[in-house]
Amino acid sequence: MTFQTRSEVFVLANDLLSRSILPAKARLDAFHISLAAVHEIEYLLTWNCRHIANAQILPAVYRMIEESGCAPPFICTIEEMLGNDESFT
Image (cartoon, rainbow, N blue to C red; front, side, top):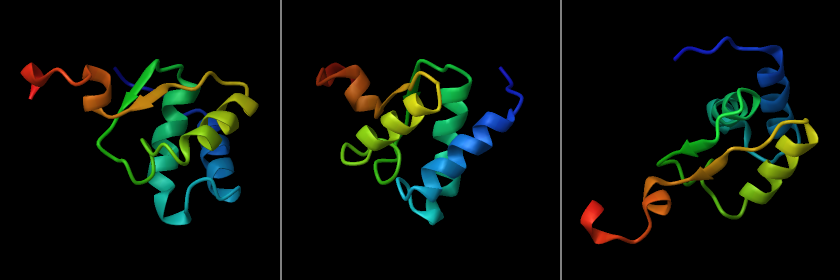
């Protein structure tokens, strides 16, 4: 599956950075989140708990995405998605 990068992706990513929701060094992370939101991806699974699957910043990320008119993807780690079933480890 390929995606065309629409201008809305860049606008949302820049908003996440300019409002200090994500730090400037997390520019690619902001782009990753924005790409998923603009293209209506339902889930965004990640190992990145510093800037993407971070419970302290996710509420602000979700608010920003909703303010942009997009539906936020469900952002979590793979472990969170699978639950605590040890048969997956």
